[in-house]
Length: 336
Picture 1 (cartoon, rainbow, N blue to C red):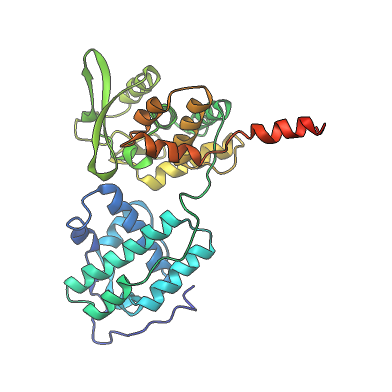
Picture 2: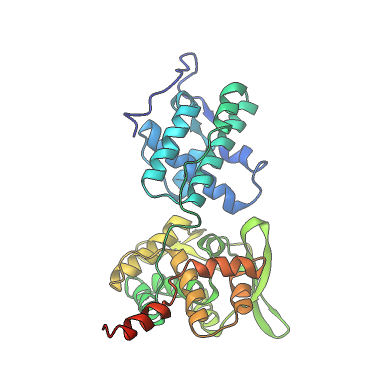
């Protein structure tokens, strides 16, 4: 992509080591940690695509967001470059939601650069006028796993572990993803202090999208996995619940990143022979399985922590629907 997107300006007078702390100023623009991570992901992708830099993940991405290389980035902060990049994302099959989020991330970056005096207001305004290409509504199609496939995935997550510590960690990760319908950001944000007892029941405080926080019941299988994991870590109240496990079994004090969580699910899916499975596919599979088994939509909505049932209805409409009419027509025609 770098060979097609040429810089508009070249800030020749800018010292090579000049950087911009995007992570710091973004907190004043986007208070939600989920939005901050999503914007960082798209800014990293933009930098990689238009300048040829290698993409980063986890803590390396965090460090990059704290020191964006301005001499490298500024020549590509322009409306034509942004429009071409969004067009490339659309050609790759990126959905409407992803395109809008990618556009918002780069426009926010341009506005913050302009506020800091690194980008002129005209260029920033021009980038703000760029519209995302047309794309299909909603999210890109994902997987919908059966109950048996979910069981296989949970077993495989423990099989791929090389130490007792990894096995305990992976068991907890999969039990929470496969029963509580957590988003991966919600799981990596979890702290030991989020667990407690209310009305005699174990509960967990989930820090959801849009700075929403809600207490939910914790299933018995998750509590068992939690107690097992507790034997391998120091459960300090403010420390991360899910952590990296080094080779040899040493548990890091740092929490797991969303990318690392994705890799655990992906590796377990390959081990189980399920192909490509993403963490959000488990949330989708839980909703679909409950609906298929006759669970009321308001119950599913509470589990997914949607703000209203209408959102859940739209969510479920994206799942493969039973086509009884086609089956009946085939029967009438005598087709098998």
